[in-house]
Length: 491
Ligand code: NAP
Ligand code: MG
Image (cartoon, rainbow, N blue to C red; front, side):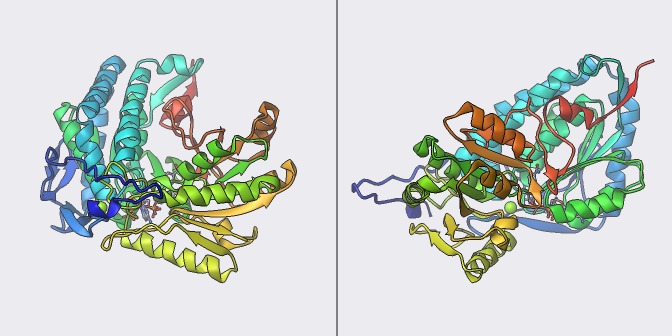
């Protein structure tokens, strides 16, 4: 398949395949549930397959946890919370989290390859973004473990207890790190449910947690589908639910939690706009748009899935974007030259295809790059739509694929109105040469994260989360700690 990623550019030169070596990875044929420090068989005896979306071939069998398994995991987490974990000094808890961070760095190559095999993302991204950032989250929160009383002056910072955590398939290990690291630093224990299509790096993390000698039950990983998540949300002995996923499921969870004492954070969908002013450095902005929507197949909640470009430079930007799209290599995620990997699952592939049809039915003009894609597996060429209107569903709804909807604007006010006119408010990007414009725009855009003259940059010290239908609460940074603590006034 790597042969498919050879390209002939106009100049006549081409990339030779640069396949990632995968001989060093270790995958079991079958994974149990990680409960109380050990891998155990599921009560039902049922397993499901996780596949490689680039080849459609199975990678491993994974246990399907039911209510009884979730109950077992929550009990193990409670026992660990009441026992060793809350009796240990905060500094010692921090040492365990540092150990996880260091071991993750040591095993980063294996984690990167498995992330790309299971989820379809290019190895360049899992190697340079997902895995290093995951380790960075553990490092960052390890440092907070024994400083909570300083982080919240005048408040008594106390762990909540058992945290139930449910994550999506777009950043499998990174989302696990975002959830587990602050929870442990605050003294909680966790039960984490990875997404059905990408359970493998969470299970490798379970192995790592075991090798790091964490007390049994502090981290439990239960694999399964949506009903496993529901069982976790509904369990009476869970004190906090942290969910990242779609707005539809987030809404269901919020309804289920209404009237309970459970604390929750919901990190949901987005429909971010990259806003390009005529005075922006255009080549840099085009690169930012490409990074914002095409890399990682557009499987990013904060993806720049809309482009708002000032009329005077619209033709130039669109032409440059099309030229750049022609150079993007769609193909084998394990080839180091690949820019756009495989769509995560058959279901997501179908969903994106439906939006491509819908966009054309709505009257927009679709443009796709002409590069070849492999014959088997799930792929989508980088795609853009022009001639869209604000009410079009491709402008309003999250597609979660490498699909960009382009609109123009004349004045700053019009840009702001259009940017804010979706149900979401997760992120945004401003491209301009003028600092004053950046400040005005960032105040006017209703989004949790706004980048200026860059896009999709993450750091564990920075809070992340959305307005409106993009969610409730913040993860990351100091804010991410308070989501896992009760903070009563100190007496
Ligand atoms: P999803 O369908 O909502 O699934 C997310 C997780 O919830 C998965 O583990 C899923 O299990 C589980 N789940 C499904 N139904 C459930 C239920 N009724 N109760 C409890 N858990 C349930 O979302 P997705 O399609 O996997 O992920 C894409 C979405 O995540 C996008 O909308 C994206 O914007 C959002 N996202 C948001 C952020 C953020 O920080 N705001 C970050 C990343 C992704 P299964 O995997 O088995 O279905
Ligand atoms: Mg998979």
